[in-house]
Image (cartoon, rainbow, N blue to C red; front, side, top):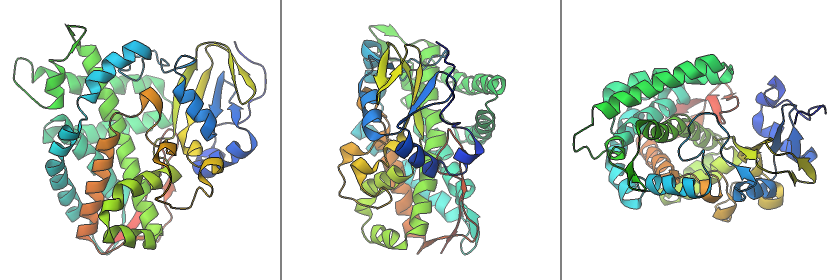
Length: 380
């Protein structure tokens, strides 16, 4: 039902967006669940975020009018699709991708200018996300430029909340994927795009709309979130030379370190859920069909779990870190993301002696993105 109560906050206001991390910290301390005036609630604390993520019966992932496979399903339907998706992120599949990925990283790192301030988002993070995504999916290099252009158009439309433009851009993306599927029909193609054409669910082949949704879920998230992750990690290392020095000396710590750095400033800010029955969170009544936003950026900084949230520590319990989500909708590509970050920073360390902060301050990203929209650094 529509409420007449005053909103507790305006999540897209300039005040919030100028420093999302500080804003979410402040909201978590004063208002554990906040109403935004549009039948939507935001939870900030770790315990509440975990409770919502774990209870898919009360808090459903079916939140969109558009097909979202597998994330837009719960229960048996989700498990069926997820079993297919998980087959693309096995240890062997990810390990087999590493040599290709390493070549991409080495080339991109070598191309970044040395000794001058550069925007690492534009010079490395975004080209890396684009190249890695296209390579993993088996797409031709000729698709990189159109995908880079598409990503920028999608970012602008999303920030403007221009739903007409977002719908048009989604159709454009689907067209790129249909062309890739058509190029593989009737051929023994073993890349992920081609393999999806031969998948079966309950003995029936997946139709094109389902395959396109799966690919959209993988690649759109990858294009935005991995770029943001690179910026978050690089920005932290530029500002904490002692941590950077330690990781250069022992790159085996990179997986744990990138998880911890992202915990402090999550590149993926929030997830939506739909309330299925009247319930409550933190003593506040919620109605069926309300929307709940789980702010991972805030939950991962909850001092009741992490103490000083800005303290870099590698001895924290990994189960507490929600950067890749939690529960049955935990990110299937988490290990691929860790590999991508590890290999990129291994190559960045190998090709430089130091990553230092640039003269200008970084520009924060705006919701729904986290991290930085611009990150001036200097490579030496």
